[in-house]
Each structure stands twice: as C-alpha cells, then as structure tokens.
Length: 89
Image 1 (tube, rainbow, N blue to C red):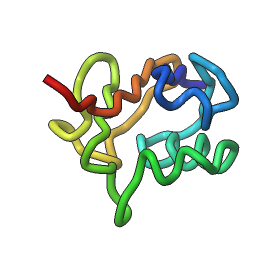
Image 2 (cartoon, rainbow, N blue to C red):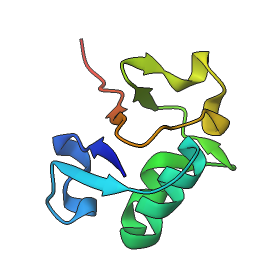
Image 3 (cartoon, helix red, strand yellow):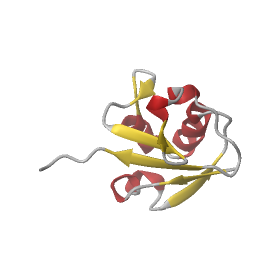
Image 4 (cartoon, rainbow, N blue to C red):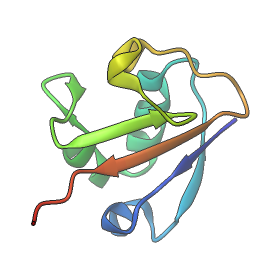
C-alpha cells in the first residue's frame, strides 16, 4: 500500500481526503487505482496518456518526470505527493 497525499485543490475530487491509500507497482498503476475510485481526478491528473502538464507527481520527494515518468516503480510503503501547479505571481 502506498500513501498518496492530496493537496487542497484536489480534495473535492478525492472525497475530501487529504491522504489516500493506493495500490500499484508503478506510478501509472497507482494513479489508475485512484482515478478508478475517484473519477473526478482523471481530468486533473492525466492528459493524452501522460501526467497532465500542470501537475507534478513526487515519489519520496523526487519528481517522477526526472525518473521514469508514469512507469516509475513504486515500492509498498512509499509516499506520493500530487501537486498541481499554481498560477500567480
């Protein structure tokens, strides 16, 4: 089981939860598990089969785009953080 931290901007689509448990051996499988249970997350997290451009996904503090993207291996007990980019200045 992997812990996925949900930021305030995505909590409405995640049933109000700030942290969810998810299953999967890769980031893709983990996100599919979450999006299967909380369909409203799909449009926020993925686009054209990849991580949406304005969302960062961190595995143990490392941006998965600098690793293997959606195919990054996830070990049980890991922590994943979803972090949509914020506009402003």
